Image 1 (cartoon, rainbow, N blue to C red):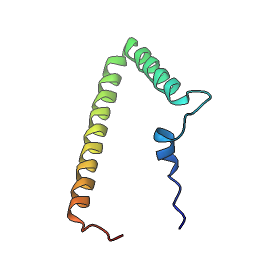
Image 2: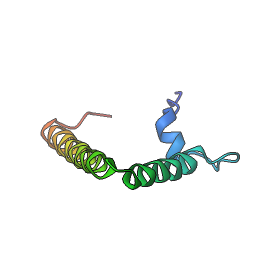
Image 3: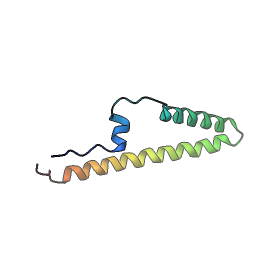
Image 4: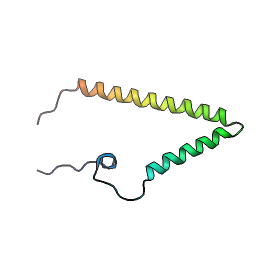
Length: 81
């Protein structure tokens, strides 16, 4: 009986120890610097306001999707092994 390999997303967070360049960390830091520079411009406050609203909407959508998936998983009968 062969087991399925975990997907790339699973291995990205829970796989074996990674070595090399931390791209995700650099991406988050670069995004923070870019948003900080955006806020420093004249119209940056308005732009960063809408970026913040978009971020909150994205988080709310992710939370609703997680709740919907949890509800669907709880209503589905368990599969036999």
